[in-house]
Amino acid sequence: MRVVIQRVSRASVTIENKIHNSIGDGLMVLLGIENGDTVDDIEWLSSKVCGLRIFGDNNGLMNLSVKDMDGEVLLISQFTLHASTKKGNRPSFLNAARPETAIPLYEKFILTLSRKLEKPVKAGIFGADMKIDLLNDGPVTLIIDSKKRE
Image (cartoon, rainbow, N blue to C red; front, side, top):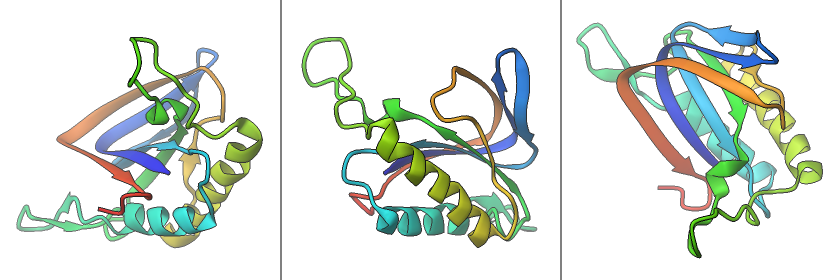
């Protein structure tokens, strides 16, 4: 599992020309699920998302997590995070999990993250054509892969 996390002042997802979900201060999280991902990946990665200390404290130091500052999370499925560009110029998505595998893991990730944050996580719709609007704060953008665990 791979995520791109952006600290945002605001973010929204629009589907079929209507805002489906939006957040204020918090995290915009793009989630890519690949073949072989398990509940263990969900547990580890959701803990990382909840615990990352990337928000400023009273001294302006990055010491607070999204949970500490009672921020919001907008989670979007993003199979293209597992694109391979090794051959040619057309990306291959063979490493991305198929919907029948990815959808249950995506839904479990939302529930697990909500439980750990002790508040609902807002999300897009798996497989939908989505337009994302955000104001990256910092900018702070991180990429985390559950297989590398760096």
